[in-house]
Length: 140
Image (tube, rainbow, N blue to C red; front, side, top):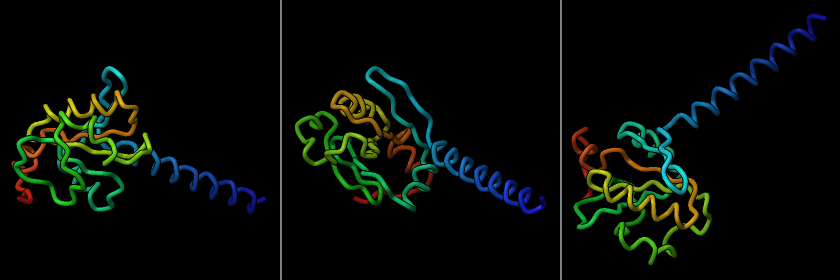
């Protein structure tokens, strides 16, 4: 009888840990619903954490170019994304995080990507301005 209780409690504990881990993974960023879908807005500190175990394509969409956050994969002008989709992952559920100087161009880039069917989009809140205000450097 004690063995059955022990196994049940252990099983419950494992389930609770797994559920907590899944919720924590999804809690990064704030979901923003827009026409055509949604994206996740992340803070500078959230992006720093995400970069520790990078599992996404990081894209600078700002023009004119003024510097990149370390580990940036691509520079694609926000207004030329549609013509350069071949540089992005072909999988529409690929995790893509875009940023610009303050977020204006990144919002336009996200709208374009949503219209192209991408579903796992992320954006840095405040762009490189927030990044530098946090005391972090850009690669120039």
